[in-house]
Image 1: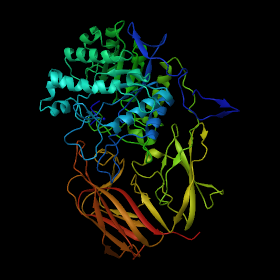
Image 2: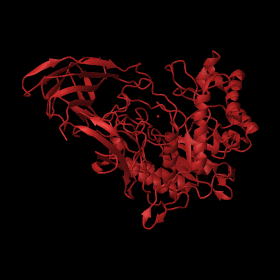
Image 3: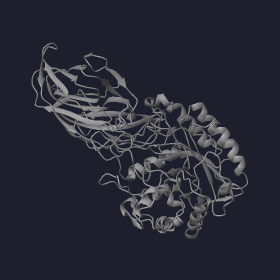
Image 4: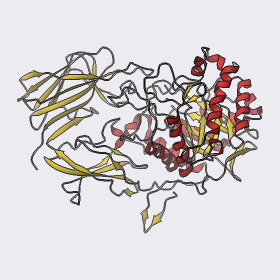
Length: 612
């Protein structure tokens, strides 16, 4: 993709939390190929699963105040990704590429390859963790070695190191030698966690020559041969980019697997193309549908059926994003091929994905993922307890979520030892993007303790860790602007915007207005402070703020502003500006008035908390 993109145990009637569909046999063997099929030992190996583009390098760390979206995944995130694959019935995940430093990277951007023969040990230690977790959880990995595209650095960057053009990557001996240095480093690397060389790691299903390459056959032969010279254990997949298999790839001795990617734009359906490709590959080489997506659920269902019926070894949906260590999920809208409609998928699915039918599709994927393995999908197990993150303010409560959790129950107590009360149930962690998952907006003054439980159709988890005491003196109204239900009055042509989410740093809902439009909030007590998060699609302009005691007569207040912008980048980011003021006096009503085209992302208004 052009990335712009346990068994369930029943004990005394209780579903025990675990990893659905865990491997019956640990990863003690390499996957092999013969007669056009993949094998795990003597058993044919087939799968339906996901591409996970952030697994080696996160490109989607886009909180409002963050100017650099790139960071390495941590252990929680890696485990969440791979355990999610297992619970969905998958046994394989395809990563994105080995990244290469780019001349336009922001300072501090991590990359795997820093120059010819120069490598980032920190980035590869994160990859060590991916392989260690994959072995433990039981997920095989497909790893593309270089990108055709520019998003994470690829052939153009290798060429740039030597002052050459990107197409020279296919033929220039120096550039080929530079790329082979990277291959040598990776395949001969010893994992710092497991002590196992990558070339001997059984979690690796295959090395892919690259992602969506337009490589000449001669280049593919040379690179596949070089991989085999270093690694006799693993298969090699040709990453040539096409919707129809390249005949030359089917004849290459050192290429074991062939692949195609499928997105809208072809006259033939995905299913037609896949069946024809499977017929071409039958008896010659295993065939994997490496990416497919951005079509309706019925068309996705036809595609999965074609993968199962045609004898394909496997198929991978584009794409799955995992949970964020700071709470909630990572998000990735697809403004290009995805038509500004489709987003990366999350598990469990959420109503926030109704525009692209996420709930129905993910249920279908899970059913097919087990069926292609000859299994019936078991019930989703009770989720494990979430991890509550430190709480500095009761209006900003976040947690690291649990695989399989469809909702969360937030509990509060005046005493750590007991007296817990549920103050919110079925909180959907997908409803906020790069924000706290919950705001306790009406908590009385005093000291409080919090904990969280995860829930799904199978039951309620044990409680999380406890955070507290949290001292409360003020309460905060928090409005994510999914609608106008928290607004007292509004004037002008306001509307809720839910498209162009990538430009708005993945905020799914914003209040969009033009010069002169105004929102008025009414608080239970006098306004003490506020923060307003705004995006500017065109020209930046100030917001005007005013207070009132009666909702009729307003007086202006001065706000400071902070701009969090480091350029539009490749996704056309809008300028994010936060307006804030504190130490206010003068009324329960706050008016926000626009001076130009603006999309308001979030409003926080604090007031005195009521006594206990």
